[in-house]
Structures are given as C-alpha cells and as structure tokens.
Length: 47
Image (cartoon, rainbow, N blue to C red; front, side, top):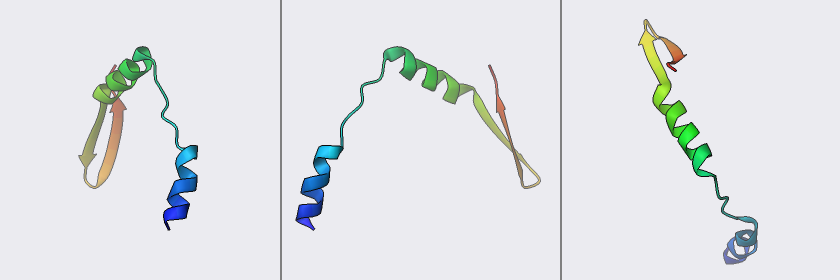
C-alpha cells in the first residue's frame, strides 16, 4: 500500500487560482439560495 501512495503523489499538483476567480466563486455562492416547500427544493440565483 505504501508503494501506491508514493507513485501517485507526483500526479497531485496544486493549482493556483486568480483572486478574481476566487471572488467570483464566493459571490456566486453567496447569491445562491435554496428554498424547500412540500418536499420540492427550489434553487434561485439572487444577483
């Protein structure tokens, strides 16, 4: 099992995101709104 993790470690790389991308994702997640009524989930984007 040790050999599996040692060989796959090289495939894992961190990706750097631009600050604009991070801000867009944060704003989108803040504007996303879910409402549940009678077992049905409604999704809306409040922008």
